[in-house]
Image (tube, rainbow, N blue to C red):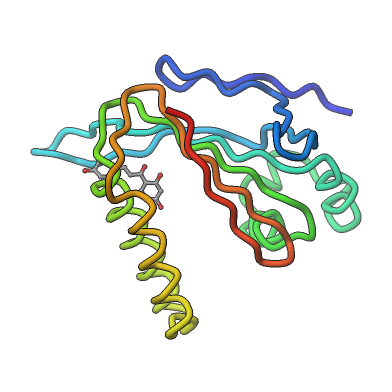
Length: 165
Ligand code: HCC
């Protein structure tokens, strides 16, 4: 198997492998990068995001994509779609680079989620209610640099959200 390296985003370190304290399952780092906003023409990095995949993602994705080079895969949208929708867990760690109010952070995430769901026609009453719940969870928290939000996405549609301050 290929070697996976840790990735550094500013001062944040995304280890190559992480273990969930909840389930004891291990996940490997699929990729990591930064997010931010352009303020007065300058890109400000606010968060670093690492996407971790359950180990069984490798045999699952290999069934279809084995033999393709990384150069081919990196330009193949369908490959990314298979990562997103594949039958394995994803663990997404969003860590703060700059201090950020929970309400500010969740507003941005919700805007993106709602815009996406509306564009693909899946935004209904249940989704609006879930968005409300999401906003509630972040209403009274503040994130200092280094604080993290974890999203556990399971193939059966369950989303777990936890914070590490
Ligand atoms: C998303 C959208 C945004 C973020 C994310 C996932 C994000 C937002 C940061 O992790 C941010 C920065 C400055 C602000 C508000 C939000 O990290 O004023 O889908």
